[in-house]
Amino acid sequence: MTLVTNHLPTAELQALDAAHHMHPFTTGDELNAKGARVITRAKGVYLTDSEGNEILDAMAGLWCVNLGYGRPEMGQVAARQMNELPYYNTFFQTTHVPAIALSAELAKLTPAHLNHVFYAGSGSEANDTNLRMVRVYWAEKGQPQKSHVISRKNAYHGSSIGSGSLGGMTYMHAQGGMPIPGIHHIGQPDWWAEGGDHTPEEFGLARAQELEEKILELGAENVAAFIGEPVQGAGGVIVPPSTYWPEIQRICKKYDVLLIADEVICGFGRTGNWFGCETMGITPDIITIAKGLSSGYAPIGGSIVSDEIAEVINACEFNHGYTYSGHPVCAAVAMENLRIMQEEDILSHVHNVAAPALHAALETLGEHPLVGTVNKSGMMASLPLTPHKESRAKFAGEGGAVGYMCREHCFANSLVMRHVGDRMIISPPLVITPEEIEVFTKRATQALDATYKDLKDKDMLKAAS
Ligand SMILES: *Cc1c(COP(=O)(O)O)cnc(C)c1O
Picture 1: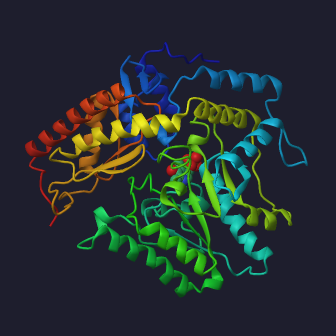
Picture 2: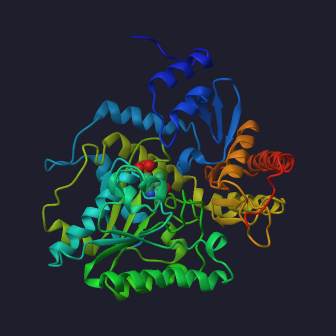
Picture 3: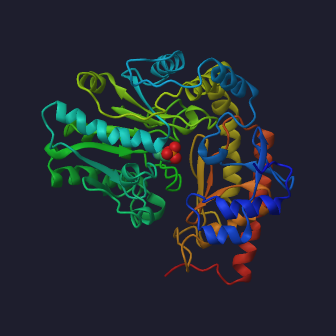
């Protein structure tokens, strides 16, 4: 066996990576030609690469490392659990302590009526569970035709065929036969990009009312559920206008349509409360969880369902599940994550320290000539870049080119800020300190300045007509 370690030269690691490792959401040839950055270790909010660079991770990995990197307790719990019971399934009328403990804890943390957890290995798998579960729910209630699900354009619910179909990413739908039948997409509440001359409040209401139109078009007797992220994450941190979610909730109630809140990013403190549905003031029937559930230290996701749904599903045999549903090591790690979050009162840190500091930093960045506005909810934010703030104009030329340019400047300045189109995305570990936020602001400003200079030099500071 070839020993591949951190001590190999970067170029050698990159060559092996290029030869044998296929990356998600990546043009392999392009990446392989330049070589992937090799991340070797991480502590707190900082990553270290194989060249010894210390990079501030303002994305918390992929929106998941809420506790920050390198918490030794997490590794200790994983090791202890692996030695005691590394694996057993929950199919054969069996259970184990980590799954029991985590389920009971989740029931305590979620809104009162959400008390029953069905585990998955990821957010995608959990949303696949949801799709089947809402259909089985209505079938068991004698309405098998009530099976259509309504989602939004530019939503992200995962990358499997089911969850990718629930999502509204057109570039994903273009590959591999998605969306599957029975899933419909209405407009998203993205006032910045699509609100035109409406006020945000008018626009939020209008976009919510598209749900009612779609339900009436399909017939309420055919619609099982609506799914949405309380705040769209991968779509670009789109914080809906205040009028949006109350209207969605009203419409779901009126037509007896189940409401699924995909909390994979918003859950576990990201928006400042335990769950995004609390921040948005809604009462979903199901929430999807993953990412922050374990702070990304172990792959685990799930669906937390209402008492009413559990009563119906528990009365039948639900022919669904994953080998790793409720995996004991992942469940123990998730439990430890929740213990630390509560013992260290991470939510108070967010509320009193991190969010105020981040919001002040974002206000400063918002004054940069390239930044159109600041979209924010708790510890997630986006900065849409624009050649003209007042008109919220897009750049002439290919969408996303400026965002990509800015992301490259961020990387060059030892900062991870992702781009979605021409929006820069911020979602740091929740434990970030004001001092670290100062470092973030400094590096982000350097990247924005460098992007601005590039655009001027290349005569790209022009609005699309
Ligand atoms: C990341 C994400 C998912 C998919 O989770 P995976 O663990 O990548 O399968 C689903 N929904 C939302 C809102 C997400 O952000």
